Image (spheres, rainbow, N blue to C red):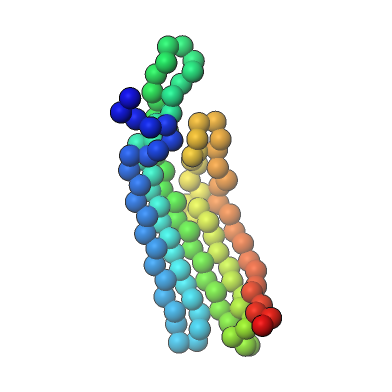
Length: 105
């Protein structure tokens, strides 16, 4: 076979971040996956393809009073893409989060 199950033929990823003078860090990541095959068990054996998808993730972190305490917020799958990394296992839609980091040492 020329295809490997769940190994995409096309995968592109990029990541960028920017730190500002006030200590704020903004970051973004992008990933495109296409040409991902799986083998169907129904009927005669055959190769089928998952739908291609693109993911965009964003995050902002900022020191809060002291460099040892940071607050952050972000969003994964900003475009709310419906996708599956394996047949029959859909992944989560848009995910928003908020939190903080505290360095104790």
